[in-house]
Image (cartoon, rainbow, N blue to C red):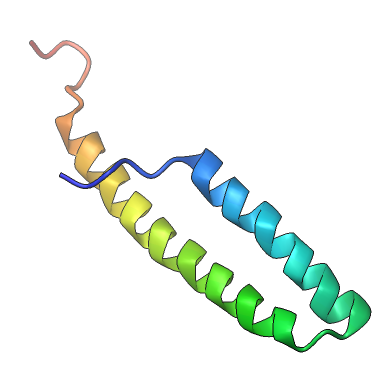
Length: 67
């Protein structure tokens, strides 16, 4: 089974991406755009995995009144 993706992991990547965002858009540092695109791609991949994990977990939850 794969590792559970957490909101904290996504926030950490996005906070890191913010630095490159500021460098690219604020100071016009072109190299930051490559790092920024990579981090955004990582977030995209992780959110897809997280979405699947949520669906799978939801299937394991019993309805109220079930035993």
